[in-house]
Amino acid sequence: MERQVCLPDGARVPCIGQGTWFLGEHKDRLEREQEALRAGVGAGMTLIDTAEMYGNGKAEILVGRTIKDMDRAGLFLVSKVYPHNAGRKNIFKSCMASLERMGTDYLDLYLLHWRGGIPLSETVACMEQLKKEGKIRRWGVSNFDTEDMEELWNVPGGKHCAVNQVLYHVASRGIEYDLLPWMREHKVPLMAYCPLAQAGSLKRGLYENPVLKRIADNHKAAVSQVLLAFAVRDGSSIAIPRTGRREHTLENAEAAKVMLTEEELGMIDREFPAPTRKVYLDIV
Ligand code: NDP
Image 1 (cartoon, rainbow, N blue to C red):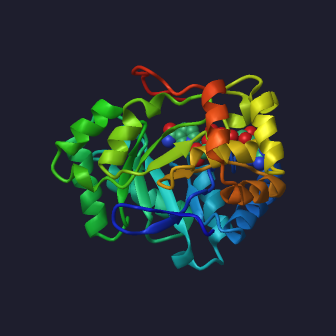
Image 2: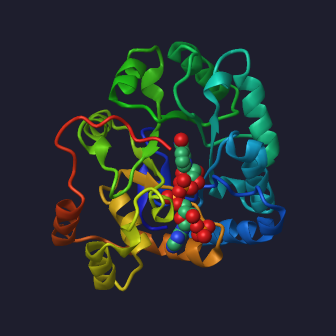
């Protein structure tokens, strides 16, 4: 994929990757889902996002099956540790289990799925240890609001955080008020989850919205592609749409070519205004 995002350590990743929540859970869909992920990698969406939580490891197993015969170096694999496993007692076991399910010996990025009771300093120390052991290349966080990021920045090693993965789509722009500016200032890329608003289930009528439809028509594109183009428009954000269908995968990859004009972004701003005050993080 031509459009890439540069991580703080200089690694480059495609601006659109592939999510895997809810994939790998139904036997009769495994083939189709594997085919979709495979087609996505072929189309340049070499970043695959998963988690130990998804289907209790079933999504990681699906990823493992999909990438079995692929060149590992050409992939960027992301997984997440449950907050209750993100301490000395469990994180090393959790990480090993994820690696085994995915059939790989390292993760490109390991995320703390959301904040829990384990002190951030302990999680960061463990992440750094995993890095030293070569089990992960880098680590990051997910569902961290501005205050959490500030706290992280005050923990030893906290500034090594590579991304913050949070919910972001056209109809949920709360992070633009202070979290996104904070992340820009501190050079932490955004990984936008639910960039398709879960096919509209997070915002009724989104795919029928006349403004989005008009913009999609301008580009001979689908509304879903406009949503992805919006999420990655600043050049330092990565979107991770999920699909179990090959045709949707290819459509999502093509969205990297849709460049929204200033005029179109203005139309979106009027229809889905950016926040003018603090909005706490949207979470699914
Ligand atoms: P998305 O916003 O990616 O929406 C997924 C839905 O969109 C599916 O129903 C899919 O259906 C549909 N879809 C995908 N592509 C198209 C297309 N081109 N046209 C029409 N419909 C389409 O939701 P997710 O919740 O899955 O979020 C994306 C990923 O982000 C997750 O899979 C996961 O990896 C990550 N995530 C992380 C969270 C966190 O806490 N860190 C929380 C939530 C998600 P179909 O299969 O039929 O195409």
